[in-house]
Every structure is written in C-alpha cells, then in structure tokens.
Amino acid sequence: MQRTLTILVFLFCLSGPVAGDTPELEANPAAELFVRTQVRNGEPADLAEAFPKKADRVLGSDFLYDLLTKSGNVPEIHRHGVRIAHATFPEDVDLINAEVPVDVELTGCHFIGDVELSQSHFKKNLVLDHSQFDGILNFINALVDGDLKMSGAKFVSTDGEADFEGLRIGGVFDLHDSVFAGNAHFIRQEIGGDMDAQNTHFTNPQKEISISFDSIKVNGYALFKGSEFSSSANFAYAKFAENLGAEGARFGNAFFPNQAEIIFNSMKVGRNAFFHETVFNGWVDFGHAEIGGNFEPTQAHFNSPYNLTNFTGLKTDVADFRAATFKQPYLLDAMSYRELKADSPRAFVDGASYSPDAYANLESFLKRQGMEGSANTIYIAQRRRERSGLSLPGKIGSLLLDLLVGYGRRPWLAFLWGAIFIAIGWLVFRQQKDMEAQKPEYENRPYSAFWYSLDVFLPFVDLQAAGLWTPRRDRRFARTYVAIHTLLGWILIPIGLAAVSGLIK
Image: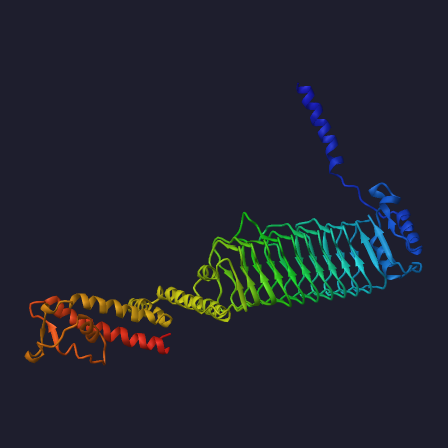
C-alpha cells in the first residue's frame, strides 16, 4: 500500500508542471498568407475550414493592423473588404487612431489580449459577431460610419471591460445575444440607426460592476427585450428617438434585491417605452423621464422590499400600469399624463406614497373623461389621506367637512343631515301637550311639530312657529335640545350653502 502511494505521489509531481503549462501561441505564417490571399481575391478567410487545429489559426496583431490600414507591403484590398472567421489573436490588438477604409468582419474570433480601438475610424461596417474577448475592448471616442455588429459576442472576464464611451455609429448597433461578464460602458454613445440589445446578458451580480448607458443617444429604436442586467444599470439622460423596448427584461439580482439600482432618471423616449413583464429586483428611478407616447410597465414586477420606486416628475401621454405589482409604495409626485390605465386607478394612486399631485392628476383625467362623480370621489380620497398628517384640531375639522359636505364635493350631505335633524326635532317636539305657548294669546294657535322643528333649525328665517311655542318647563331634555337644534342649523345650513357656491374646496 505504501509503495502504491509513493508511485502516485511521484506521478502527480511529474505531471503537475505539464498540466500547469500553457503553450505560448505564436502567429502562424501560413494562416496569415491564407488570409492575405483570400482578402486579395475578395473571399472570406475562414480559418476553421483551412486549419482544423485551433493552434494553427493564430494571427499576429501587427499583421491585423497592416491588413486593415493597408500600410507596409499589404496588397490592394478587394472591395469586399476584410472577412476573417475563427482566428485567434493572442497579443494585444492596437488600432488606436487607426483609419480603416473598408468593411471589416472578424466573426467567431478569439481575442486573448486587450483590443484597443479608441479614436479609430472605421469608414464602413465593422462586424465582430460571435467573437470572444478575454480582456478589455476599448472603443472610446471611436467612429464607425456604417454598422457595428457584435451579436453573440462574449466578454468572459469579470475583470474585463467593454468601453464604448463616446463611440459614434452611423448605422445600427447590434448586440443581441451578447454576454458581458464585467463592466460595460455605453456612456455618451451616439447611434445613427437602431440599437438591438435583445437577449443580451450582463451576468455579473457584484455591486461594483458598472453597466451604464448614461447619456446614450439612439436615433432609431432601442431594443432590450429579454435582456438580463444582474447588477445595477444606468440609463440616466439617455435619449431614444423611437421606441424603447424592454419587454421581459430582468434587472437586478432576485437574491439581493436591495443591491441593484436601476436608473432611468431624466431619460427621453420619442415614442413608446415598453416594460411588459419586466422584472425589477432593485431600486427603480424613472424620475423626470419624458415619454412621448405610451409608458407601459404592464405586468411588470417591482420587487424592491425596502426602497420606493420613483416616478416623480415622469411625463407621458398614456401611463399603463395594468397588472403591475409593487412590494413597496411608490412615488407619483408631479407625474403627469393624458390618460392613466390601471386595474383600478383609485387603488393605484392609493397604493403610492401620499402625494396631492397624484390625486389631482387622476381627478383631472377623470373630469376629461366626463366622469365628474368619480373625480369627486378621488378628491375626497385625497383629503382623507391628507387628514392623517394633520394636528388634532385639523383632523377634527377635516372629519367634520368630510361628514357634512364631502369636502365641498357633496353639498347635498349638509341638507341630508339637516333633514335628519329636522326629523329628530319632529320626534322630540311631536306632541302639543308637551309644548306651551310663550304668551297666553297664542294658546289657541294651531301647532305643527314639523314646522316648529323646521323654524328652530333654519337660521335667518321666521316661520311663525318657534316664536309661539316652547317645550314645557318640566321637559328639560326638550328645552336643552332646542338650543342644540338651533346650533346645528346655524352650522349645517351655512356650510351647505358655502359648499353649493364653491366656497368650500
């Protein structure tokens, strides 16, 4: 047994260095010649077909620079441009300030080192579909006159970075199905056409990871349908000329919903912003965003357990929150819209943190729809929520206005209460035998309990009843109630008239 263990340890020590060594990749002259020939003939150079072994598909970074910029002894490039597939670039690729006059396709390639393209100028299209980047891709302040296509690209290092800050693209920017394991910056990028980032995955959930589209400008559609943002994402001050589509996208990490910040503050969308079935696992800020058409977080889920989703100052034509769910209240201060759609507009506004603006906007919307009664109900609901924040005297006054005239929106309540108290007075003063004339000459006058109750109740009115009769001296409750009855009339009638005239609001 001991002998066997000794042999195993010896074999492990012998094999260890071999397993740990990574063979150094060197440029293959045959592969480079193959590429030159294919480019000269206007044909694609698929190294996977020409060189079955991956180790034979290695190209040098200097070779790529010479090929793309037509410097040195590179032959005239065909009008079809440079089309290379499945190449490996083990060294850093340096194209800083390079001028590239032709279409470039580097599809399915593997960039082991950093790729520096800052301030470069690609005068036609650049295609990097399905390529893998192990290090940094730097596009800072670069210019692509045509399209930039990177669908299916993979940025595999959590320490790596894709930096597109200040990049200007004349055509479309295609990122769909790409994967970013590290930082990704699209800050102040300008895209002349559409941006397709559907099913793009930003997979690193670490709080320190930065995914930023801050101040990006897209002159067409921006599509993020089905995309995943595992960490924070920033779209502040972004401008999208057409639709922004993020249906079914997922923001933040479900296991750490308080870690992510999803920022759309001051974003501008020319037409519609779609967030149908989008999941937000973190704090969401749509403050002061401007949506020219519909804002549709329909069936969206706002799952932050502690922070309030912010819609403060959001402006849109139609706000559609049907079937949206919130784990916490939300902020609707100064949010404006022409039309609000929700399963229950009243319940939607009630579910927000208290804001007079939210109720006022909903009231205005209902009035525009000709729903005056519903608008009044919303106003009353707002005043009732306001009451909880008042002092004790304020709460009492607010409660009285609510009960007596519905804060001026239900003036008929005052007259209903008046009718009730007149009826109570009729019951108290209903029998003439319990009454006595105030003067002997009035004893033969006819007595009506109704007219007496009404006369005592109405201020500024003499119906020739209250001045003739009074409860007998032994009826102490009835004599006390006369004063109460009179006081109620002095309170209810002026309040009802003020409500009718619009003085109470």
